[in-house]
Length: 196
Image (cartoon, rainbow, N blue to C red):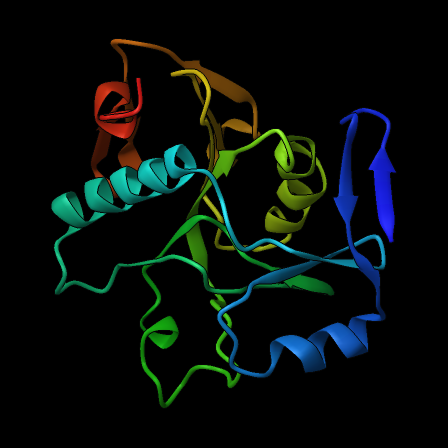
């Protein structure tokens, strides 16, 4: 089946599915990552080399500044639980809730319960969804403080913060993004290192 969103002008292939069937499907260990959008399930696995490199750069920047021993952890390709909605898979998610790390306290199948910072690398196929429906789902998470959108085709990062009413902030070449909540800084040069 092909779904077409007129705003995107890009065909997306998906399979109709109920939320219950979706939950059963993702409850089984799999190398694939799926998302349920408007009753249609899509495979979100796979990306361009640039997309993957940006994800690695962002993950490395978090790890360099947070270390590997504290309560905060960086995840890729892990589902985030969304209250009253199907879970989603961010490109990078930061949680500082020890229950998200402690295997004895977390849900099975694993779902990050307390996302603090979410980063999505935009591709032409998913940009509209990441800016609208997916962003709306993440905002249902009481713990979310920062949502970052990182286009893979230009060095321009969008940052949305809960404390600023989710208003868009744009950061371009030569600028640094400061996340005061965790005393973190990300230069655009470091995010896009090796890309342009």
